[in-house]
Amino acid sequence: MGLKQRYTSTIKAWPVEERPRERLLQLGPGALTTAELLAILLRTGTGGQSAVELARSLLDRTGGLRELDRKGAEELQEAKGLGLAKIAQLKAAFELGRRLMAEEKKVRGAVTSSKEVYEWLRPQMQSLTKEVFKALLLNGNNEVLECVIVSEGSLTESPVYLRDLVNLANRHRAAALIVAHNHPSGNPRPSSADKSLTEQLVSMGRLLKIGVLDHVIIGDGRYYSFADEGLIEQYGGSFDGHRTR
Image (cartoon, rainbow, N blue to C red; front, top):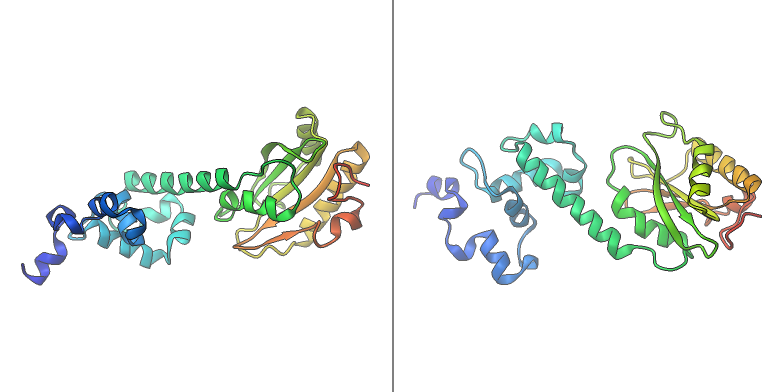
């Protein structure tokens, strides 16, 4: 087999023991490289490239799985060999991974720390390319009743309507809530708008006897907690109970 023929052949032409799908079934997924796992999702290559070679070029082009996940369908279509079917398969796989992590990290029992909130929400929010504002609605024992999306888009472009948030809490008969949003930049440090919003939330919660226990900002592998930094208490709330002071 000549050098050119070797590198342009399809995976079906490879020895059985070298094919990614067969290797996965025989050895388990942990034995495969990231490119091989990606190739199983892609199924076929393009224009002289095998699926494994296409997968490697995608990883090289984007800088890895996380950046590949963050790219939208239009951006991905710019890559040679990626049609809508392949893009849909990739997006579905990434979303399943997020949902699996969310199930594994799901808060059980009472919420006792900002770290629990972060570990639960991180799989859902860390890779988002736009700001999403969520609220965890809690009962009197600080157990999660519901997690709801309140707003999508930056806080300046898509304001969080405080009254709507309180109405959600009342609808679910929540005694308290914890709010969270992501920073697509990866830096979780709060802006002046974040601080102003949090102070308004705590004040309104205190007035309506709904505890605002924390505001957690999700960054890239890290987070910021208004409660941990003492700002919730400074604004007139507390993480210790289900009522603000």
